[in-house]
Length: 314
Ligand code: GUN
Figure 1 (cartoon, helix red, strand yellow):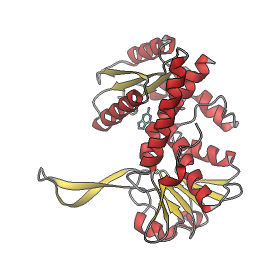
Figure 2 (spheres, rainbow, N blue to C red):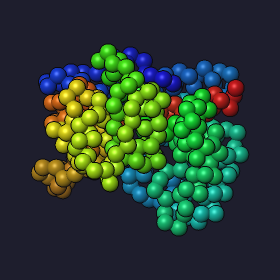
Figure 3 (cartoon, rainbow, N blue to C red):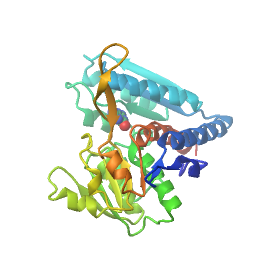
Figure 4 (spheres, protein in one colour):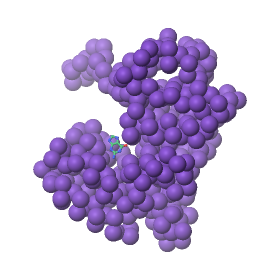
């Protein structure tokens, strides 16, 4: 899976002239392509199977897991969800992962994070068989990505989806990523580090900035490509953005809105890590929040599951 079909329709011009990158439309394209691929594979007797494991009752995790199950069904996958209580022991969770590793009907396993504190999340992630690790979090997959072996790696979903959006915008702008200055703000194993690897694989000159970076404004100001993945509402002012940059905002932060909702509670709204209006006035292209990178994460999870099923069948 490289790019969604009909990619040009994912870009619209804002009043300031910046291209707004529509992640919802891009994700719909990816999902349609995955569904077609799954149908072809099913005709040869392999139905892609995704198991999602949820431990505890974190409301945000419940929403994500439901969306993942729904997307899997839309793609025509065999979809199973295991919901375990908050009191689940590490040994029981590991035993479940091992059973899923051995289940031939399951090609992808996702254990939703965060996990309750009695469980060592890293140990659980490392128990998932690397060829079923559709999150791409296992050290084997992180290593394959680091050595540039995309053929064997499963790539983390959010960075993989971000790259599709970035490449669609670059294509429209007539830019090659090769040689451009890319700055990734955030160094998580889930987004920042794998994103930097993907940009490096496209021959961008990559800087990873983080909470200890000196003069972040100056570093951001050099970025032809800016990827913000810190999880802090609007921490990057629009005025820092280099004119003509492509901005990929991975942050999804809930903040107080204005007024009350229908239930009489204070309204909230979602914002990214980048101050959108200001950035929009300077950037050549930018992802909105919501509706940018977010929808791509689930779409790429389906794409990874199809990839894992194809590899198993090969
Ligand atoms: N929790 C929040 N995002 C993710 C994700 O991408 N994968 C998993 N497993 N858990 C998450």
